[in-house]
Image 1: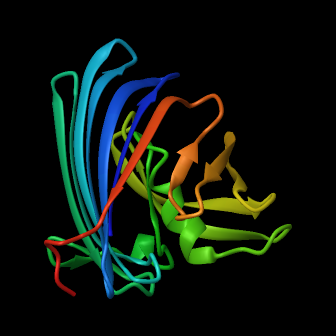
Image 2 (image 1 turned 45 degrees about the horizontal axis):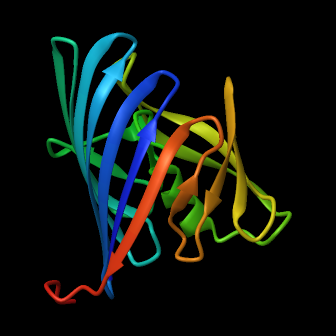
Length: 193
């Protein structure tokens, strides 16, 4: 199944994002393009994420340009919280299953779908955190709480928000962060799993 999502960010990231999620039998592949402005400077990004069928991140590549600075990231994981980049182990990221890329709210759906919380349940996790403004990759703690059938509360140091998901488990809207959203679903006739 192929899902195509588009949304426009407001706040710090005034961007338009076009995202394609291809859900296969054994894996999920996400590719997305963002274009816009971050703090009055041009911002462009492309990311590709591969997860297993349980939404555990297996690999990601992110390329972004902010102003005159360009960053390329390429990481892989064993889905158990062990990470490599350029064939080197990254022990500071041990225990991180998901990634959180500050340029997009979509990466929060990785944790939400993997955790599969019941209503009222809350859990704290460690994530690989990509901070565009600081141009850093680190680990951080995040807390996810399921409020009702489709609403999740998210909190991390200095920030919190709520996410609404559709029945498909994909991001619907984030109050205060997103202005537009559209969805189209098409059967996947090109992917074989």
